[in-house]
Length: 446
Image (cartoon, rainbow, N blue to C red; front, top):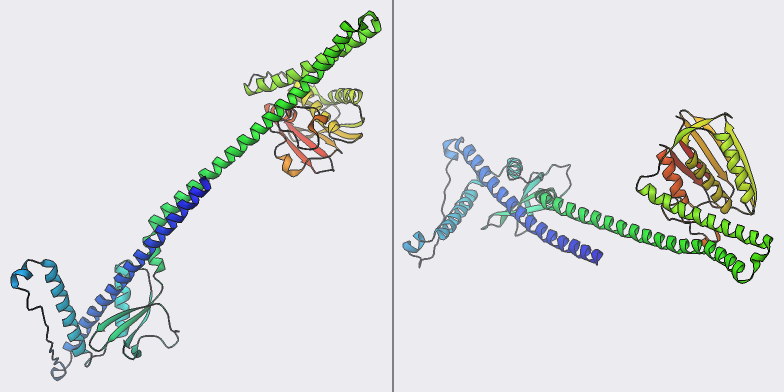
């Protein structure tokens, strides 16, 4: 509906702008004809002055013109109607100018070059930004060009204004100019600018609105996925612990010390797993409130890497090969040991989850200026470029296969990015589908 509304608004604006353009173009044409008329008067004055400098025998101009008026119009009616008086006066001036034309044209022909310059000057004074190419004196009866100011090298132009100065003989000036479109658009510049800005602002507002809606929709989908996944994940240890306790109570398995110990260990493992998941979720909530406490110390990386690699190999159900490399061997970094352990452990855990049966991981660290670089590289399934933009978003999980086959809440990488940033560092990812993934962490040494 918004798109339809904006489209209709644009069409309506376009319609009115076209009507405004036609109106201004018509008005500009009238102004152009008025300028030509004014130039014609000025050119006549020029020739009359030139005539006054001729010898006496060549100066005589005979003017005979009969003018008729409405005989029924009384003097009182003329006195009481100023508009009518102006019309009569205008008609009188036109008739006088026509008479002067007919009288002087036979003595001194029209100077079209001067007429061109006068028209150009009047255009400029009236705010018309159009150039005058040339003008022609034309007999409208026969369409014959009687005189022209067109240079021999200039081709015939198509845009012209026709001003008939001698209605008795049907003589007219055809003044060829550049297009008046520039002048019309210049006069419309305020309206065009405001309309354009309005449409741009509306388009930007609508685009921003759509992005917000899509973002909200995506967030709702991720939260729904998180809720469904959390229900599934939390239900698993609860069900296993419940089954073990039920077996001990109702099936008399507790009488055997060995069985009792076995089932109690199962309960402890599942409850420990449940506690870890709850703590993970709570830690994200604490981070939103900025309540995560950081205990910063100098940490030697090689022993930390070895500890994480050993634990991951023990609990993995796949064949895991983790290559360690630290340069220099005694490299230390100023960080929170628990959180640094968690983020590296989390990234290695993801590398194992999203790899085939045989997993190869490179865990390496080196210095780059005043920064420590930690690289975790695997040969797993990889991440598409489209998904790489979102993997650090809260609740986001890569849409690949059955999500329940790979445990998680979509919080791991969000947690990693959050903790790295709390260390004034940054994390980047390099990956391609079926070519593995490399996470690079950069945090200050001091």
